[in-house]
Image 1 (cartoon, rainbow, N blue to C red):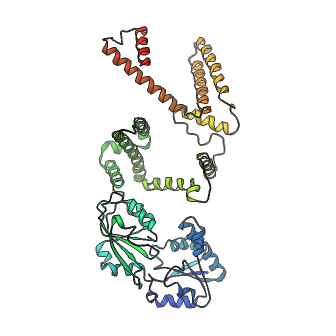
Image 2 (image 1 turned 120 degrees about the horizontal axis):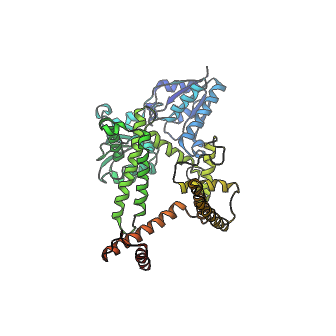
Image 3 (image 1 turned 30 degrees about the vertical axis):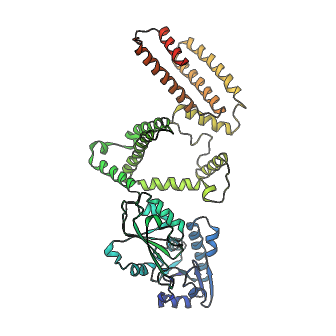
Length: 485
């Protein structure tokens, strides 16, 4: 069976590479090295035989996982061709070495055996430098690239690896931006090497204390507040209420649907009430966004209890979808305008959902009717089924209004409702041709009506007019007076 021997070349000092690893390096002529940017890389590169590094793949790939996928594919092919190859990685193969994790899965699926030799990792040098027992101290090891998610809910102590650049350290700092500036941290740089540096610094300066590279890690003894602590507390609250509150226990996805819709509309109300000159209007938006967020938590908690999915799956799904649909940000695509971004988005969505083959597949039926109508018209227009300008749908309004008048004389309520719907559909078409959102336009008009009528109500009260007894003529006079103001 083809075989890949996986070895680690230690934390930096060549003297820490094990004898067993040196023997395998000398025995296997076909050798691969994840990166030559390591003080012990020469042990692999200078041995007799053929040695290849994967440094070039870091330059051509957009993400580290793309690099590791490419490495795994090449190693499996090489093992199949040469029967046995060696793969060397910095540190220890099973300590935060994602390329090995991916390789083992790929090799297993391809009928290639993997054999891993124990090695000294950067962790051993770290505990010596910090003078701590990691088990006794309860240190949690996290990846700097996934700090915000992996350290969620944690206070420390934390050892953050893969902090190979100052921008990674900056991302770590931003993930807990409410952390006090004077929180102590330790940067561990080139441990065991002649230029070793152990920098005791603060949270505010952790990305400025030194020039980080692939031999840099970060130790956080204690955080004042957990990373993403507020979100963790919200998640824990949803679980507690689901377990202990009789009302919460009885709820289902179906019974909660109306609350999700209500909370969404309340968010819209809060958005419309925002005043750029009045920061206090943010409070209502914060509250309503929180209510909406809790609905998402509630549904996720129900699913978690059913063993179906969790809030982490929800967050991961939307994260990955947004990354894939923004290739102009995370890939090589070009999109210099909002229209180009939209075109890219639609093309990617079509590729992601090949089962949607009909024109209206994917258009949500249960949304607001004006939005539903506008989306249907937009889809049809992409196939050329559309008026060339607003004149056509404006004329159509006159036609539909006449048909509505005629239907009203028939006395058939179903026919009247149908013709009224046609009239509204034509109005939506005009809005679309004017690049306006019909739902928003109607909401603004309704808001204007509400404001004016409430002023009519106040004016009537000031003049001692009973609105319920006042006739249309008197109310209309008050209305015209308010309009003039």
